[in-house]
Length: 255
Image (cartoon, rainbow, N blue to C red; front, side):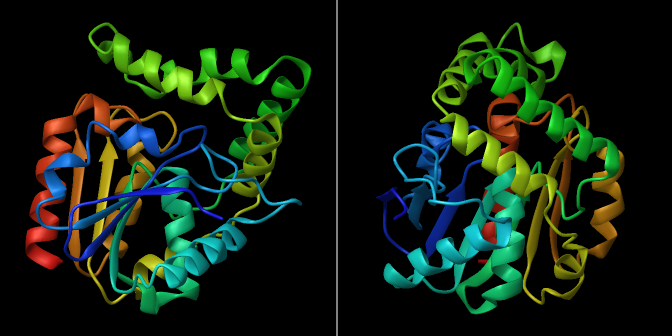
């Protein structure tokens, strides 16, 4: 079961949150779209009010659950925008269930698999939360997602993101960390998808480096790409108005 909220009417537009987040991450972001779209905000399995699968899983298995939910809600030809982990899941959804997706957006995400050093970082995260706590991890992890120069004027937003992350169940955090660590490269999906793709990166993102983002942009056949300046991994907070403008233009041009 996937917990979700639905707003507005029109063609379907789905926002998918990232790691240690839930659908409330979009609560101050989605409103400009409800006049023209039926907007869905979802909790990925294990986050928010969506139950975690009973056993370990892969990113493509989570994508299959998303596909099953979309079919149950009779959603086809959707625009789907995913933040970070949400983007990983969209790439698998597009690969295995292309009929469900009209176009999609990667928001601070990547089609590349984890390199060895990132895989080792994931292992250290698992060790840390098992030895310490999810709360201690959230307190340390979340602020680093924001560009250091933005942290002073985004105190409330960071506090909100930390609060959401602290609620992540230990089992959810560990299983998704393993799934992200072991996910497959999806650059072929970027290359082969015939629909439009939105790709938004941050020039100060320490989770998905701008260098890696620039390597992926030429793979996109059609769509919109943007690199947000003075922005880390959280463009919906750090560059809200610019991000909204980019998404609106993409939807106007392609959706």
